[in-house]
Image 1 (tube, rainbow, N blue to C red):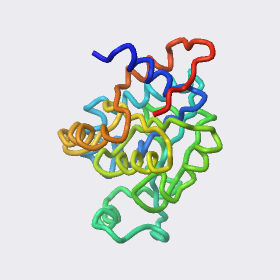
Image 2: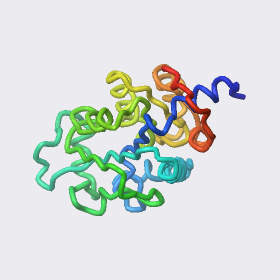
Image 3: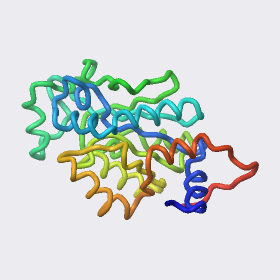
Length: 223
C-alpha cells in the first residue's frame, strides 16, 4: 500500500494550478470503433484505459486542471509528414487515414472536450511535444507537472514522457490510462522504462489527489 507520505507527495505534484492533463492520440481513427489500428483500439478499450482517460478528463474539468489533447494527423497529399521509418510508410497504406479535418482526428468518446481544453495537432514525428506547440503552451500555462495518458505505450507515450522530462517537467503516468500492443508490453514498458523517469501511479490515485482538500499554504514538493 502506498504510504501517507507518497500520497501527500502525489497530491502536491498534482496541484491544479501547475498541472496539465495530456491525452495522446485519443482520436477516433486510433482508438475509435473504426480505427486504423484495431488491435490498439481494442487494447485501449478492453484494458479500461480509454474509460480511465475519460474519468481523468472529467475530473480535471471539475477541478480546474487544464486539459490538452495531442492529435496526430496528416494532409491528404502527405506533405510535411515523415517517411523515414517503417511505421510512417505502413501508416500511409492503412485503409483509415488520419486526415486533417476528418472524423478520424476528432477526440474519441467517451472523452469529452470542453471549451477550455487545448487541442494541439501535429503533422510529423513520433512525439506530441517535439516540434509542436505543446511545450510553449505548457510554459505559458505555468505547468510544472504533466500527466501523460493515451496511446501508444509502444511509441508516443514514452516519447512524450522522455520529452517532458528533458524539458524540465515532472511527468506523472497513470499506468491504467495508457495502452499498447501486445497487452503484456504495456506493464513491461511501465516497469522497466517509464518508472525510471516518471511518477507512475493509478487513475484512482490521480483522481483522489485532485478531489482531496489542500491545506492552506501547502507548498508543491519538487520532483
